[in-house]
Image (cartoon, rainbow, N blue to C red; front, top):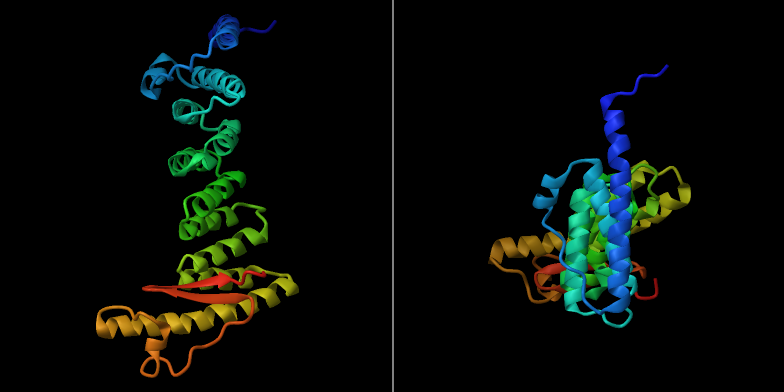
Length: 279
């Protein structure tokens, strides 16, 4: 005969109540959204919700809030506005704090918020950062965050930094680290991109990859020759030159040329190494 612990009895008593509460909240929300166009109410602050319960109860609240938000978003049709988005963002932030290991929160944040403008892309990344802490081996989270930095926030260096973190996740594809290096270079940090490429060359066992990395390293090293000349010019004059031609002849006799796969772009005081448009 098995002996049931007090915690077992508590679970048996609490679980039906939680399920009833869940269905009650769900049906109330369904009835409300079916007959009115009222926006969802703001969620309670996480500091208050954490006083209500811990662990499983917090997870339950987060999951119920997720369903409520998903149903609300699905019923908006064309009524999306800043008020709607702000409320959805608030709910997603609350969920990520109550149940940070719920992966669906981060996919929903990326699909609903990231493309709505700078503020919402930043909010999506704030939520994704929480996910990266609690789900460090989920490749999608730093990938989403890096994409948002590059595409929505115009910050390729930060995108490269985040994708570099992604490249260290076990079993992540090799191209993630390669992309991180390219982003760092296109963001004006050629030195870091070169270091990463050399590290990837050392770690690669594929001969075709090694050939590609060696070719790209050569282009990065040529760009670094110009970068060092720019730094030397700035050290002597106290400012960077307006044009690369100002480096000749005292700092560079000739500008080293990269191959057809890359383009050098100089915008005082930064030097960028970009992929050619046909690449």
